[in-house]
Image (cartoon, rainbow, N blue to C red):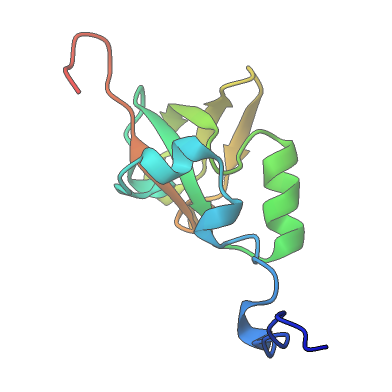
Length: 118
C-alpha cells in the first residue's frame, strides 16, 4: 500500500515566526495608513496614526502599553523649543512627553483633520 501524502517540506529558518516589526504583526489600521514620516515631524495640533515603532522590543513594548503602538492614534499637543520633547495625547486619553530622538524612531501617517477630505 502506498501513501499519497507528500513528504514534509523543509523548514526555512528565516521565515519561521513573524517578528514584531513584520507587517503581519501590525493592526489593520497600520496596514491601511500611508507612511508619512517620523513622529518628530508632526506639527502641534495634528493627529497621526502609529505605523511602526523602530526600537528594541522592550522599549517598543513599553510604548505600546502607554498607547504608542502600531494602529494607535496620537495628537501632538505641544512641541518644546530647540528640538525638545513632544507632548502627545494618545487615543485612550493618556498624555506623555516623547524625547525628540525617540520621536524620530516612531513612524506615523497623518490623519485627516476635520473638514479635510480623504
